[in-house]
Length: 143
Length: 139
Image (cartoon, rainbow over all chains, first blue to last red; front, side, top):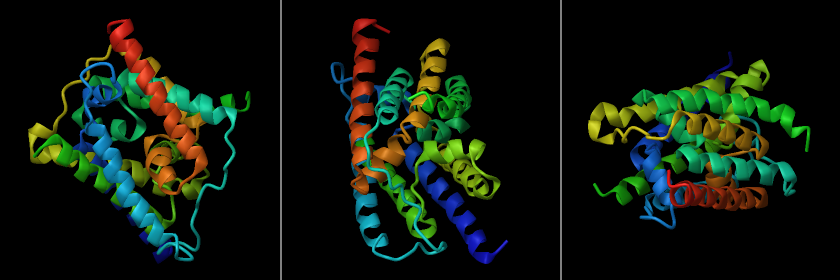
């Protein structure tokens, strides 16, 4: 394995750890808090807005500087999505995702970050979610 | 510390992770895309995905190792709803090519039109779903 490849793997692990730490500190792994944010008609909990604001602020500024460079530190090129079309799977997918998110209060990141709590909900949610991701591939061909 | 301050710091850390992923490796830190790639991508692109997902699980465990006060309350959603919700989140992020991190944080920061539309759509769907759940069906 080349040294650069090794650095890339370490970078993945390190980013993952920082990501999970952020999720757990922010309150995103608290399903009731997430549902509280989505409950506009109830006792609205604005906490999630602060998570989004903090995340977007840092990412927006960081990306601005990084993407001026020809390549990332440990790879020859940036791997950026290039599509700009708004198609049916994007909308249907987002509707389904939002509905599931509201139903349980978990999106993929916090569900993984919350695995260590050992709650039954999380331990059921994560494998079922992965199953759904795998089923999405053949389903996407229908649209 | 006030929950809003923790949320801002935690959100900032998620942003930092996204910036690290792009600056070091040139990748979008989108959890759903990386996670599904663990099971479907070619072998050469699998290990970094596994490490990223493993990192999230490890990083998520750190606060509770320091203080039990970081452990959130046990979710009270019924098992059948957890299964339906998990399936919907998996199918939805697969079809829609992303979730809160990939579309919401990384995509909007790149001003991607697809991500902006997706984020507005899943937020709206989340609001409607919780409205129905809490105020119409009274769960």
